[in-house]
Length: 279
Image 1 (cartoon, helix red, strand yellow):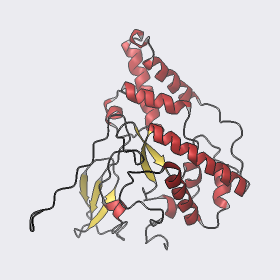
Image 2 (cartoon, one colour; image 1 turned 180 degrees about the horizontal axis):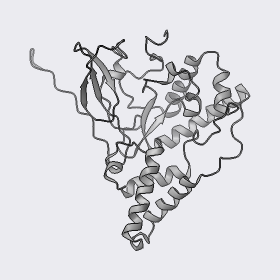
Image 3 (cartoon, rainbow, N blue to C red; image 1 turned 90 degrees about the vertical axis):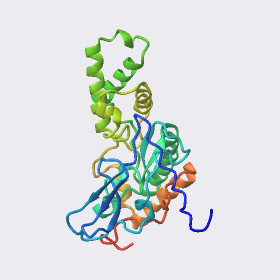
Image 4 (spheres, helix red, strand yellow; image 1 turned 90 degrees about the horizontal axis):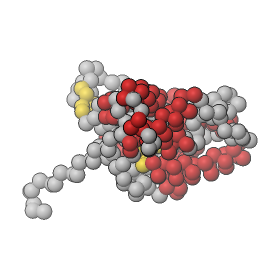
């Protein structure tokens, strides 16, 4: 490159394929013009200028929150059939104090279906270890299948089956509407902002993705949510929640060996805003 010539522009992030969860790259700009870094508001690649000066600078200066995220699996790089993967499972995170679970997307990553299943398999090993360490047994019996899930399984099977062309159009539309509503409620299946959900029709690829996950949903889905639950007991037994979160991050790195993590993602990345708690 010749001296004085402009540096080449970085490659744009690839678009998410239809039916996939996506990273919504949105910049927030303060009233004084300072960049507040990235945030999520359901609109892709836009900037928002605030009409007020925020109390703090949020994640300003933290590379992970300021760069544009690529819509690809962070493990293998595939842009197809992406799902949100929660590095710290929801069964534990729901019992965290607000300062540790709000306003942070660091531990929500995009994985393809195959890598998501493998990551969940590795996570199960740590769940069993925590169950032994904390005297918090996992649910012995699988939770009963609720009616919406049972119905979603049935509709996916019918819409992918060899006799699907025999289903009356009105009935197909009603089944599709039910599945779309189910997608919106189950964030581990798809993003509410997906083009297909917005358009009111799911592709065969998305239906197959749903069928796979409905047969074996993420391990923390459907766990008991009472004060006697596995997740609650494990969280209450922790002396250092920040180290607990780092432990899950290390487990993800060791179990999945991701090659496409966003720049700035790190086991020791701050766990809350500096204005909330000490790091």
